[in-house]
Length: 237
Image 1 (cartoon, one colour):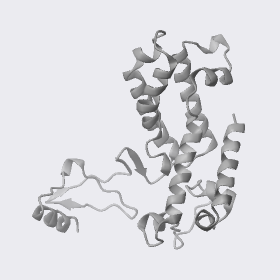
Image 2 (tube, one colour; image 1 turned 30 degrees about the vertical axis):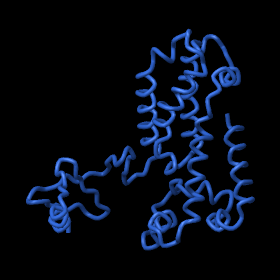
Image 3 (cartoon, rainbow, N blue to C red; image 1 turned 120 degrees about the horizontal axis):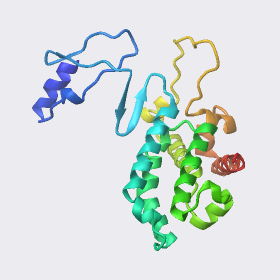
Image 4 (tube, rainbow, N blue to C red; image 1 turned 135 degrees about the horizontal axis):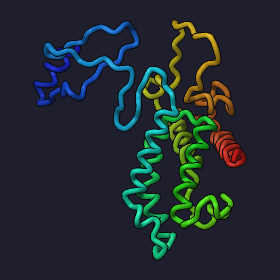
């Protein structure tokens, strides 16, 4: 199949780069050849900045986003720590350069409480550097937020996820995005122990299995649950 894909692609001027192509299988690994060369079989890979793996551990992908955000922050480090630059200018550069690096692919995140905590802790570290204070100065988080006035990353990530969830609910139900969001591996027996948290669990906790119907037919209830979710995040400091 992959060689057929390669042959058809060549007819329209597209080539498969063997050095950038990997294979991930759910079944027993078997050699996959492309033009006679075996492609590497992996258990995880990065696609468009998002980590795809068997374990589906959201903490690993979140850590990649945090590293990317720090890289973006450090590119403008001298600007952020400059005491002569007004905070409104620092805030604008942060929201243009650093926040997008933080929240790239946030729509697909499994927003566990400990992951949200990691987001806000990292953001507060950056805020302290922008203001020029340390933990030894004993400034409260409320004081820091009032001085810098950055948008709370936890709320921004949740907002993007819920917006995407409602867009899914309004799509045609035959779209692949919808079918994958609601897919259940009924033929596979669940492993013993507590199941891993899924992308949709946050929505089901507030609205049940019919969260898509709520998003589609009851916008007022959807907004009410959205507000409840925000309040839960803010109270879990």
